[in-house]
Length: 260
Ligand SMILES: Nc1ncnc2c1ncn2[C@@H]1O[C@H](COP(=O)(O)OP(=O)(O)O)[C@@H](O)[C@H]1O
Ligand SMILES: [Mg+2]
Image (cartoon, rainbow, N blue to C red; front, side):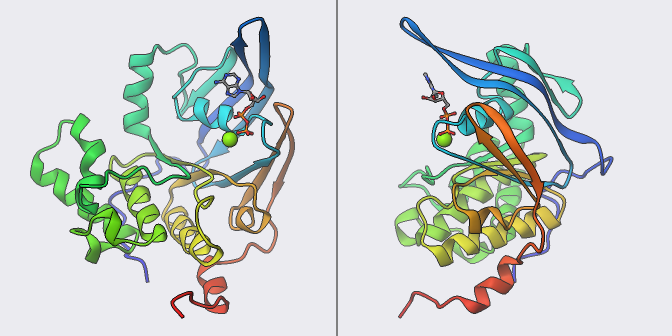
């Protein structure tokens, strides 16, 4: 049902190239006299085309790890290679540049601008890149089509359901053609059917080659990924493939619609 247009996703040059390679990273937060050791030696590689779910108790370091993957923060020690480039020592400016080019973010709250149409919301990240208005429009329309919302371009967030708003947020994350989609609890504010609808979008994008890393605390959401990493006390304690992964599009057929 979702559009098949692939042009908003960066092509994968070598299928098994590690998109993300993290080596023994540590992260400390200084809080007055105390020092929180949030990541305690995390090493992992994520390859192009993977779909990884991060699980673990609250406070186990998931968001800290995602912030580093997304170049919002730097590790205290250790290395982070993003598409083969060591970004661990990059300053804020360099990180912002890389983030804008390579990373798409989706959060629990959709963070859409209220007085702005779906299309304009999706166009926002392109304002920092040197593209013509026409190209900006084209890319945003393509991204909306990829999440199945081509017909909602002129709608405002208040005229859309939570699931539709989250899909607009996913389109916004895709518009700069990132290599990685990072999502921190993307279904945290959604009912169960709508959550599976978002997983349908993620599986569809992942099928087209996008690498996805997603935090969730729900087992039945993590199952839609191909691999699950479990964090505990700042370390990865489990790293397992998902067996018999369900297709969200199939699961949806078994779920009641909430309209009635
Ligand atoms: N900005 C911060 N300042 C101080 N401590 C923090 C900050 N962010 C997170 N922490 C601490 O780091 C640890 C890991 O937090 P976090 O990465 O948010 O875990 P999770 O996302 O798994 O709930 C926790 O002990 C948390 O209290
Ligand atoms: Mg968190």
